[in-house]
Amino acid sequence: ELRADCVVSVGGGSTIGLGKAIALRTDLPQIVIPTTYAGSEATPIIGQTENGLKTTQKTLKVLPEVIIYDVNLTLSLPPRMSVTSGINAIAHAVEALYSKEANPIIDLLAQEGIKGIASALPTIVRGQSESQESESVLLEARSNALYGAWACGTCLGAVGMSLHHKLCHTLGVSLRSPPSLTNFLTKPQGGTFNLPHAETHTVILPHAIAYNTPHAVSAMAKVASSLLGGVSNASPSPSAAQGLYDLAKYLGAPYSLKELGMKEEDLEKAAEIAVKNPYPNPAPLEKERILKLLRDAWAGNRPE
Image (cartoon, rainbow, N blue to C red; front, side, top):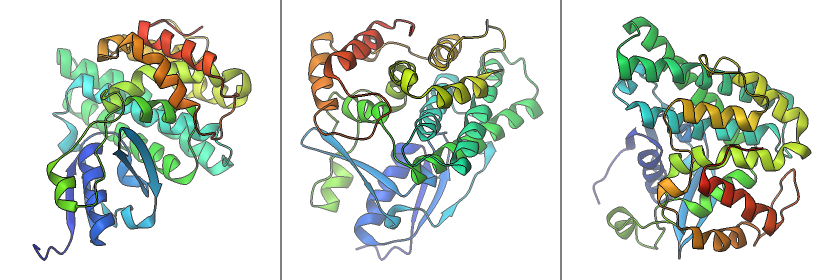
């Protein structure tokens, strides 16, 4: 109706996702300018929710034609949002390392992405919370975080994801996908449990890693190694799961589903959805074990 030549998306994962939804329905080219670390701009993936269940679709129709990274546009991103957005991106790289389609190139890119973000986040939080960092140091940290987000997003677009992303899609917020584009633009709806996207990734990731670690030892060793230096003022963590939990908690991010508004009585329903349709995962998908994972995440327990 507007005879638009293209879609321009300036913002985080939700904004970019909306641009992708418009592109999917109109075939318009996209110019994307990310201002968070979600990494969605680097993927041919769109997530949509209908009837309370989130589904994902992979198609080159939603892969942006142009991405513009401008570190100056990320300088005002609040510290807490910077942390949760960054850990959301790290989740893509973590699951890429134990994906059934994992390969040496993606392994290297995943480790680069984790290192870039984990090393940048403490500087970003210190700099914005206490004004202790010089402008050049902050710019470098923000630049490293954007680089890490691109690397992690590229991993997400290249290989399949597993339990962690399934749980987050079950718990999180997305936009409904009705038949009408007008309805899509004017009536956004929540996912199954309506929890905030990046914060849910931040809480779930350490517990999903702990669940899979016995069946993905080599991949988790790479994650733990890549995290070194992320928590510069804390004691080294002995595992990837504990390292990510400690990183989030140290930087002031949420670390329990309870504080995100999840009801304890809904955990069983979430576990049932998570095992409903089989999908690749290093560890066997067992409802009772996943329910324990969710209970630990709800309470904010440090992974074992």
